[in-house]
Image 1 (cartoon, helix red, strand yellow):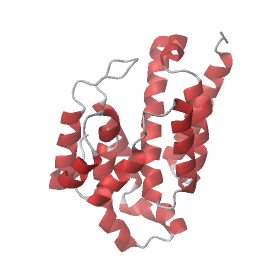
Image 2 (cartoon, rainbow, N blue to C red):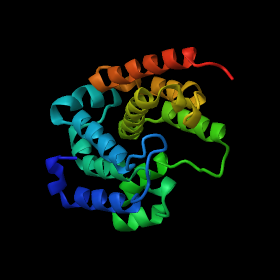
Image 3 (tube, one colour):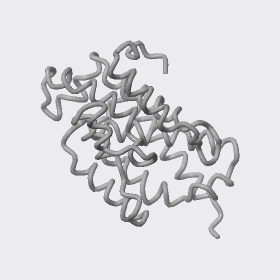
Length: 212
């Protein structure tokens, strides 16, 4: 992440905090440090909230510019921290104490209850984003999904169908493919078009994947 916003002390603190809490975690297929995912998602959010791109994002939801200026720092902190509660020992209380309640609110929405069955968790996430009225809630999840599916394509191109032994096809057909439909607010963005292309890419790969 080479963004000048690391000069913002709050965002710099979130970056350092997330990097330290995810230390030692790696991606299942590639073995890459997982923190590159947080930085990639951050870059997506940063690019999609540049001032010249706010109007097509915000106007359909009726958010005035002063609200965006007020909440943007919390948004950027939250995207860096979005997996800390779900995948580490950090709690929402820790996020609130270390940062602020709005950042913790966004992180809480991104956090799945892993004590519940996979399908129940994923259906809850799909329903949550179908109903979400806050565009920033959708944007954090959008960036999370786009970054993950980008990585999946890279992994698939490196290992081929072996990839589906680690990440089952249902992760796409029963989750990401449906979740993508909840992001139509971003339909005018190139990032959304990229995600649609990635959906088509994996739809073809899954169709050709031998059924066991």
